[in-house]
Image (tube, rainbow, N blue to C red; front, side, top):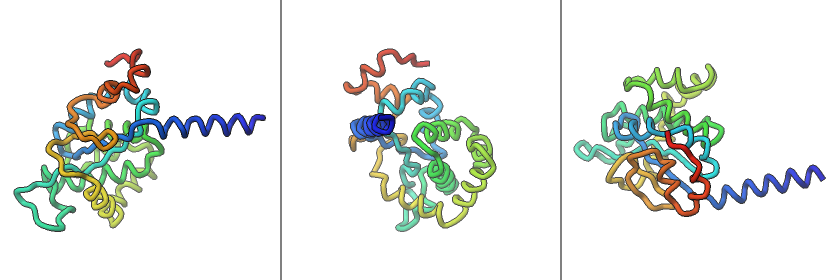
Length: 198
């Protein structure tokens, strides 16, 4: 009987996750607007996240059209070549997170730190242990980081603004805590009615 109960609960959780909107958030490591948005994310959003949406962060963003050349995804980022490296740090860090809550906490922490072009402060503060820190550094300085950066570039549409949010494929500018955007959806209002935005 216990086994059947566990199976039922598991299937219910899977079913609920499949019913939630799929959300992609496009960010850039040296983007002031991305930093402002990520710093605005409340604990209420994080605590409610699994009930609101299936969220994925995609660190890539816009290319610098003034210096664009074909096949320069490793060096052509909107704010500088260093931003591409920061995007790799984000991509590598996101890859080792266990779930969307830990991913959101990692990205929020990353943008709470002051900009430093080697991004070492973010690595030291925002990853839990020495193994993770070494893993992300190795990833970002090797072929795996390049592969992740390239994959994210391919998955990023032509954006007019960063950060942007895509909810079930519909893209819009993102200028506030994305939890508030998700709570504006009709399906989420019952969940969000008691949330205290602080």
